[in-house]
Length: 387
Image (cartoon, rainbow, N blue to C red):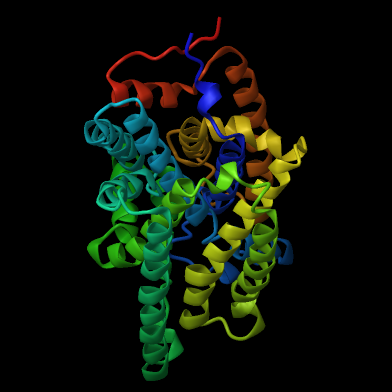
C-alpha cells in the first residue's frame, strides 16, 4: 500500500507546527481585541500586558507568516517535482489545489474570522506558478530582489512622509472603530458580526494594502521554492556550516531590527523596518534552528511535527475555538481578556492541539481538512485511516 509518510520531510512539518504556534500568538491579540484599530500601549495598561505585547511584537509579529510562506513555496515545488516524476499534468493539479485553498479561505474569512491568510496564499500561489521553471538559484535571487528592493523604496517613502507630516497625522489608530468592534463582537447578532467581519477583512485586504502584502508574502514563496529545488532540507548535514553562519547573521540583524522601535523611536519608519526586514530575518533564523536541530534527531522540536502535518486543520480549529470563546454567538468574552491571559490561552490550546494531532495521526494519514484538500487536488479519495 502507498504510505504518504514516506515522502514527507519531517523538519518541514516541525517548521509548520512551530509556525502555527507563532501565528496563533499573533492572531490571538485580534481574536479577543480590536487590534486593527487600537494602540496596544494605551489599550492594555498593566506592565504584564505591555510586556506580553512587546514579546509578541518582537519575536512573533511579522515573522511567522514569512516562515509559513517559505514552507508554502517549498511545498509547491515538491508538488511540482513529484507530479512531473509521476508523469502527471501539473497545472490542472495545482489549479485545483489552489482553487480549493481559495474556497476554504473564503469560508474562513467571511464566516469565521477576518484575519484569514489562505485567500492571499491561494492568489499568490497562482502567481508563483509563472516562476515554477526557474532554477533554484534564480528563484531565490528573484525572491530576494522582490523582497529587498520594493521594501527599501517603501521605507524611503515612509521616511519622506515622516519628515513632511507630524507624527500624529501618520497614526493608524482609530478609537471609534475599536469601540464599534467591541460592541458588535461582544453583543451583536450573527449578521452584524458578519458585516463587521467583512469590514475588518477589507481594512487589511484592500487594493492599497495588496502592494504591501505582495512584497511581504510572495517573495518568500520564491525563496522557499528555490530552497526546495536546491534540496536544502535534504542536505542539512553537508550544509551545516553555512546554515550556522547564516543563522548567526540573520538572528543578530533580525533581533536588532525587531527591537529598533524600542531602542530608538516608535515611529512609522522603524515599525515598517521592524516587520518588513526584521520579521523575515527572524523567520529565516527559526527555519535554520529547526533544520539544524532536527538533523541531530533531538526529540523536543519533533513535538511540533504532528501539528505541522495537520497545519490547515489546526489553523482553522484555532479560529473556530477562539471565535466561539470571544464572539457573542459563543461565550461573548471579546475585550474581556488581557494580552497576557490571551497568550496563556494560546499555550493551553496549542498543547491540546499537540495531543489531538498526535492521537489523530496514529490512526489517520492526514488531518481532516488536509484529506479533503488532497481529495479535491487529485480528484480521488486517498487512503485516510491506517490499517
